Image (cartoon, rainbow, N blue to C red):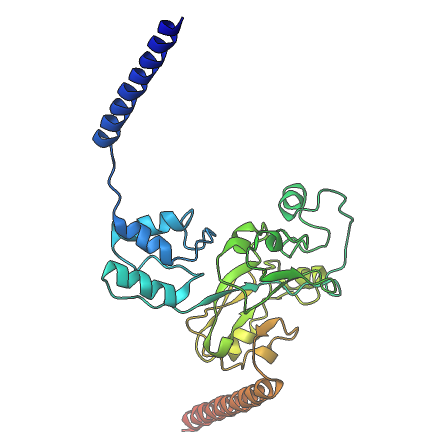
Length: 311
């Protein structure tokens, strides 16, 4: 009996040793060497795995950095320029600084401006509601108000305002990770350049219906009247699909378009009423000068025409 036990132990030990040797040989033969810089890059990243960089996670981002060696198209929005400088140091390349971005809400249709036309009695999810119908108000472009965007924010940078039914961005917490932007089925959330002194100007409406229809659906909808476009001296505003749109790269933050909008849904952040009032006064004076100049040119042309006819 003792011999049987002894032989069993010896056999199992031998099998274990042989298996270990085989596994070691196989692991060495098929071992894939990973560049040590990948781990170094990953160690300086925030490791939130938010996907804001366009990669599925921080490891994938680090892998892409090492594989390409080019930081022009790769940027970690959560870590920002400070983290990217560390990454550049590890890679031995020059850091590429980029202006910080922040999420903005492109909808002003709060409860007081968008009246409910029906009652939704389904799951409290914007994604599900958007698949079933256009919304519980007349505007099919506005916020559904169920907070899917808030639920996916890992940084506590959003909350739903109970008074307006719209999401609110907590600026000092927003990392521009893009999670809320991708989650919103109505696409009312966008990443926008944070701007100097956190000043931004953007149109808070995405309703592409024609003027009268849009205003029936929401009292502060953009009607496509083009008044803001005419007020802009820098060609930063265009009118596409009955909707005004501001080019952040061209906008000089002059604020002259703000009060040109009759429903005031061009949003200006971190500015003062006095600055907007001064900008409006400047615009009105400029428009008056231009109107006077055109009138003078018209009268001059009329006089020249009359003089030519008399001669």
